Length: 168
Image (cartoon, rainbow, N blue to C red; front, side, top):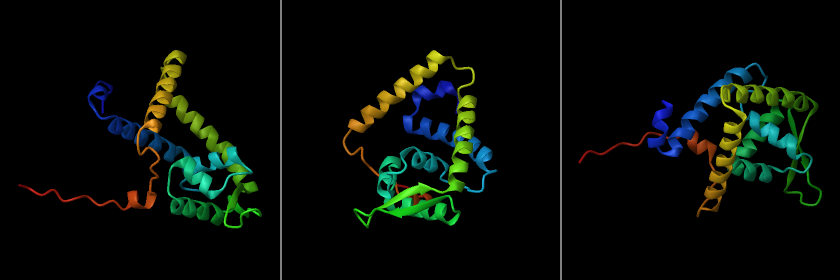
C-alpha cells in the first residue's frame, strides 16, 4: 500500500496495514526473548502495579476476560507474572510481575522504543507531535461514538473462517 493510496481507503484498512508492518518488525526484534506473545500487556501491568486486576487489564486492552485469563496463564507458566488474591474481594486477583518479569519489561520497552524510532525516521518533531494530536482526537471521537466499548475476543478473531460468497 502506497502513501498516496491512504486518502482513498477506509481508515481501518490503513491502520491494519501499518499495524501489521509494525507487529512484523516487533515480532522479529522480540523473538529473542523467552516469551512469544502478549509483550505489550506486560508493559501495562508494570505501569499499573500493584493495583491491576485481570478485569482491569481486559478493560484497558479492550479484550475479553477469557483472552486475558489465557494471557495471564501463559505468563504464569513462564514465571513472568503471578496472581495475588485480593483480600477484599476473593474473586478478584491482582497481577504482579515476578523478578523474571521485571527483568523482561525494560528489554521490551527498549525494543518498542527502537521500533518507534524506525517508524518515525525522517519525520520531524512537529509532524510527530501533529500525528499524536490527530490520533488523540480520533480516539476521542471514536470513544464518544455509540457502541464504542466493544471488547475484542482474540480467540474468535484467530479462528475466523472465510465466508462463502454466493453468486446471483
